[in-house]
Length: 68
Image (cartoon, rainbow, N blue to C red):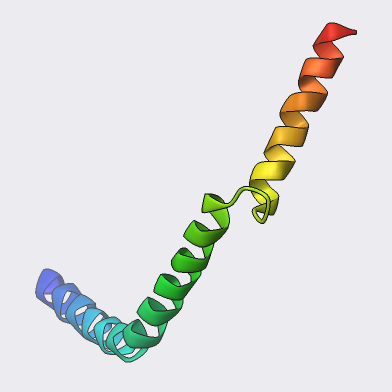
């Protein structure tokens, strides 16, 4: 009996989460796609990508440290 109760409870929880996710999935998917598109565009031209330039700087610093 306890197992059935927990299963029912989990089912209710899951349906609630599913409804919520369905409600917000359209917005989130749209946001994710736009963000990823922007990220890809940035990563293509490295000059506009701050992360890659930072990583390059760090590599250069580490190399300079090893040389000296």
